[in-house]
Length: 364
Image 1 (cartoon, rainbow, N blue to C red):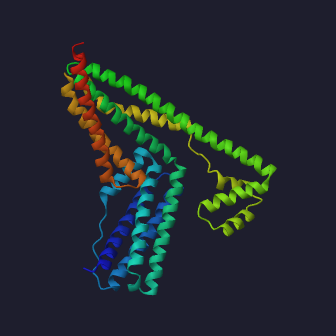
Image 2 (cartoon, rainbow, N blue to C red; image 1 turned 90 degrees about the vertical axis):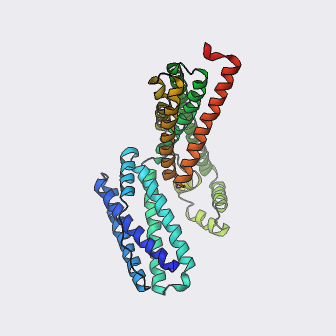
Image 3 (cartoon, rainbow, N blue to C red; image 1 turned 90 degrees about the horizontal axis):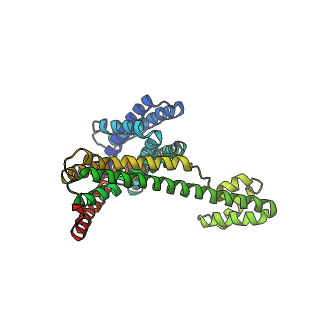
């Protein structure tokens, strides 16, 4: 089959499926603005599907039967309920970015085979996808998706660190699972407090630094507007803007100090208290998976495989969420996190056996 036509068929099925996905999300969305946007996006994706339908027929192909990606719809709805609209915005932004790249490659690869009308229509499709991506990016900012990242990464740290701790302790105290469990909890609570405090200090420090720079710029504007303009031009040229254009932009913004401040110093919107709570609580949630079996089993070596199984499953879920929020390969991220997490646990177990052999602490 002609590769150009094969790709067009895939585009048709994807656009049809996306149209259904957005319509389904609109049904469950409580935010009026986002619900209306989902319906609008559904109509646009339906229009795209119609374009590819006609394109396939025009080029002598057979239109495939579209299918609804029910697992995807179910997963996105579940993610919306668990992590909120910000996580869905991240996921859909990733999907739109992927579509943009595919369409752009398609446009540049087969440009000589399109009619002028088809060329313009494909460009319109790309522009629509760019607009979709912008909407989801803005939605992601609105719903504090950075705190979803705090939650996911905090849980990951709790899982890996405490799994390593209880695995190592299992080798030292094979006949005292409750001691291993209690030790894991103590380490977990200390780790959660440490992570929460660290996040609080980090986010607060970043905000204070930006506020200090903003105060400096305000003084600079009052004392020497010319020097402030020089800094703006330097910032714009560092970002790749031609110097002449940067000077024109600076000239246009000369009387708008607030706009210049936003260009020079992006606002820090993350709240340090909220970030600390998300990180600390999610860390404790991660602790629960590897620790729980030690309070139920008769020996540490009996609890160990269940601890690894629970932690490994949770790591796979966390890796999937990180992939969805970051736009990276789910398969690779799951393999990476599960392998490193369980690898750390194995090394911890070996170290525990070494400590038991050297100090004979299991008899204590």
